[in-house]
Image (cartoon, rainbow, N blue to C red; front, top):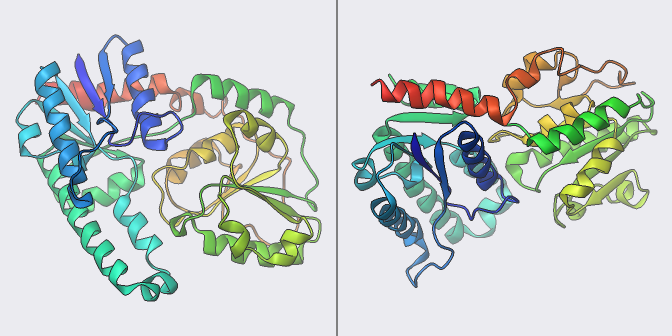
Length: 359
């Protein structure tokens, strides 16, 4: 099978959407397919910003006509129009619920009232983009969603559609590192819990509920602490200043992949507070490292829950000491029978390539 997997984001392994494309292509190549990861050139010609998406579509169409034919084109629904749909069978692959992100990020009164003109123009652009996403879903041969929550949402939106969904996992090398952390982990003190939250500081990440929780929890439980990592510099302005100054809350604005291992090993419990999320692979990383995670019902939480019946818990934790002794073994629960990139590629073959070829 010859296919191209498209990212509208640059193909950098540091970017979440590009990570999905690169790992999907590599896993399908390992299974004998010719899978090409592709992104538009970084040099956008001097066109108005609202026409950048259309320029990227034309860049993609030129590539497909030059390098084709392909058996399948796997691409963001935003990238799919009638010209591209005519070339071959298509998979409209979602990597994040952009409209849900937009609604969450623009729900803050300060943003709505602070710059009304910007609010109106941003809303108009978001509606235009969402219309293009809906068009891509309707034109696609198959729809592929990230996680079952997004699959169910699109199935309700597109009556009669039967979207498939895929899951996320760390790379094979990362999973070996996480397994080593898990094997060496020793339970911490239930009355001096070291919490860890990882993510960029954005409203859809549930930052408001995180601040509210920490302000209450750390005052009620004087032995607890929390590290907030990968959040940039905005977090320090939003968090309780006395808890920052005392060291009860520590902010790590950015960190490298090499620094993630000691972050995971040096904490007892994870926090995941998202209002809307594509998946949240940090949940996989925390759980695979052997720590319990208190999580909202967003992203991949529903799909991970059966494999971590003790470790994946509802956010927020109840007041009082936290049980850190019981750790789920992902080998025993069958987690690795589904959450590796080889198994993700195998499901892709079965649910999409095979089914689509028979239509």
